[in-house]
Every structure is written in C-alpha cells, then in structure tokens.
Length: 272
Image (tube, rainbow, N blue to C red; front, top):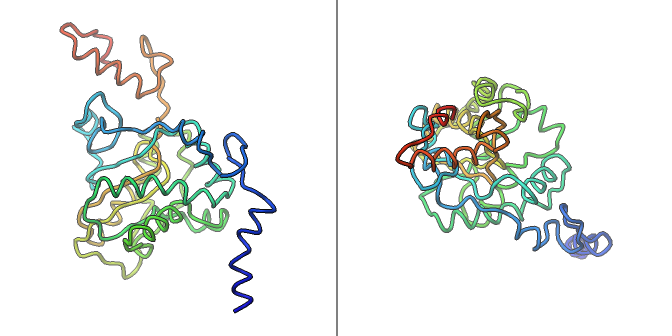
C-alpha cells in the first residue's frame, strides 16, 4: 500500500521538479496556457453540414453537392488549424508531449455535450503498426480515450486497422490525398457492428480523405451512421490565380461566395 501511495505522488513530484511550460509561448504553469488558448479560433456554426468546411452560412458546399464524403454523415472540427492549436497538435504528435492529450480532448468533450447525438462507440483513426512503433502512441487514441472516460462512451479500438502504409499527406493535394488513402484501412478479423453509430476521432482533418477511408472500413463490418470529429480543421494548400492569389482556400471561398450573391458576379470567380 505504501508503494502504491508513493507511486500516486510521483506525477505531482515530477511537476514540482519540472513544471510544465506552454508549448507555444513558454510560460510556466500549463502545457497550453490560458492566454494561448484564447487565441484559438473556433470554426463556428457556419459550415458545410457534410464535410465541415467553413461557409458564409450553414448549408452544403458546392464540392459536397458533387462528391459528398460518404459514408460519413458529417465531419466536424472545433478549431481552425493555426496558431497555438496547430502547434499543440504538432507537439503532441511529433514531440511526444502526451500531457497535451487531455487539454486537446476537452473541447471535443464540450462539443459532444453541446451537440448530442446517440453514439454507440468511439473509434480513433488507427496508425499503421510501423508508425505506431516509431511514435510509441496513437495521438487519436489518446484523445478518444479521454472522451470515452469523461462521457462514458465505449472506446472501440478493435474494429479497423491501418493495413497499408501511406505517404505523408502534408504536401499532397486533394486528389493525391484521396489516392494515397484508398484502401489504407481494413476491418480487423472478427470485428462486427450491427448498425451501431460510430464517432471517428482524429486530431486534424484537411480534405477528410483519411476519415472517409476509415469510415469505408467501418461500413464493411456493418456500421450504421458514421460521424467524425477532430480538434482542428486545416486548409489544404491550393495555388490560386487572379484576385484570389495569396488567399487561403477558405478566404478565397468566402470571397467567391460573397461575389456570387451580387446581382452581377465577377466571371473570374469560375476558377474556384
């Protein structure tokens, strides 16, 4: 009993000897300080209800009218992937600051509480075994475990696997990302879902290609509704011309969306 009591005091002792610092500004006290948290930009409600990209008003974006993110009913993100949030996610994923997982999971927990849907299980997007061995942990599973423990939702890590190693998505365009992820996930042997609603958890969504590929594997084993939730939503790099040069894809879309509402829209907007 004394040994267990001593072990329980170790984290507090470690924090006393090596107090946490904000990974973004370096301030002592927390791995992401209150001031840096205040710089996080929420996506808000004006999004595409299918893929989750920001819009000038809530609805379905042009891309999802043509190619919806089936079989996912909806992809949601809490923040824009920039500033302290982006840095914290990278620190968790690439620098192994696992103490950030509870902090980054907190807004996901709040989101689920304020947007309740009947969820039968949480499934983190799995890593390939080689990547898992290199990193030592799956950041998406750390986030999902925090959510599951807090909201008492079953954590299902026994459903799908990343069966094919893929290139990093960071420098790929939308079409390349989709090809890169095609067939990257498969069901685990013996896994079965009888129409259950599954919430996929990941750290960042860009085009949604990884989430869609994961959902396709879940559908193979009988999943019902599939939703996806991420800490942040990233902009995919796109080369834009004309009046849109230098703008992010989201900024370009907002400019285009505003222009199309005018009585005489600018014909150059057809590039979007």
